[in-house]
Length: 495
Image (cartoon, rainbow, N blue to C red; front, top):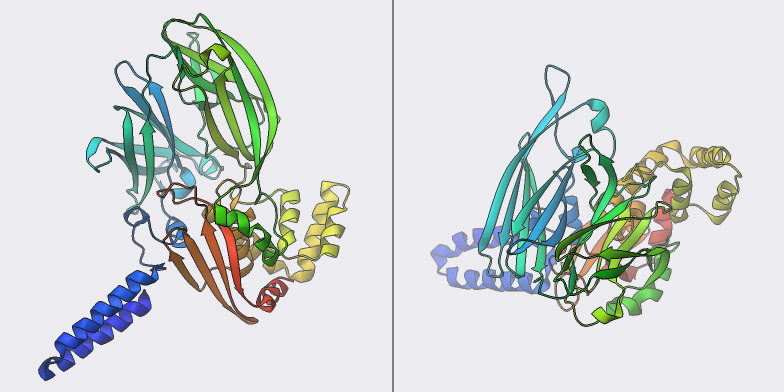
């Protein structure tokens, strides 16, 4: 786009030079041809700094980089049955790490931000709108802890239908803002024998002095390492036809075909048939299953179920569904599920020694890796790990793991960002010299690098089943253009 602006400037200058010669019409025709050519070529990286919410067709890489240094907001959109209309609950969380804090006289850190929530119908007409101002005061110790955040919840009563939810956050201290968009289908809770609300994840439950339960919810995108059992909350709605209901619930770990390290991106071409068909290959590993019987009352029945805590990092799905066969085909919302990902406590940084060793698959030789992994204790593996980096250059270690941190912030989807194809390329080669994306039957994005060993292009393809409005959809490696020697040269720079 910068080149286009320069060319357009030259043409406009020539227009004024030719005005006295009566050649303006021909030059304007040339501008029109150039504009048409640019539009037909696709969407290339503009680096213009516009809000990503204003252009959903911006290249994925640019849209993610644009968010660095800006306030971040996470949201869970949960539906429940209200007294008259379905109710949409928005659970919002703003990490302190992405806000600008100032120090007051009491050595406390303070900031203020504004959240605007707009509910639009399919014609983009505003149905409802709320704005709230949040003030945060914290200590230096608290703000440095990963997971420190400010949380709130807002509710909207909506008729069944399709809505576009736009959430804008403004950091008043520096004027930075960002947006989150989501398309929501509000379901009607009909007069079925049984229907079930969405699932709310709960980290812990406390009983206060008056006996009331206080729940500590957690958002699906903000689940940290679990050391205690967590819970799910749901509401079961009954019309009184059924007295007792048996529900089945469970927890499943989802392993995708990209949930591994890629030793060589050129070998990743074997996955190309899946890219073309838009199939996301996954394996499901059942962690736990259980049944519970609920005595139903006419109306709303609340349910809290404990889940296993014996789970590590990864992508999971928790589900809840009626087990009674007599309900088959008689209720409009037979089962519900929600997906979430468990991060380590230090995410997006990487401090666990075994994870740090695993990430060396991108650059270390097999012999070096085997030597490090053969350490019988964590202390021995840490010692060999440090010796490795001392041999290749200690300064490279900080650069390497800073790129891993950035890859986690930029490319995390159903797996941590450093494990994704884009994350791998970014870690090895850094920021692409040119980014170009194409919008069509399939959405692709091309990263171009000009390296010492020659030029190389990585073509990424967006999963076809993704929501068009989802700016965080996963990209696969579609093809690689360029010499293998360029990649080897980049690897050798790390050795």
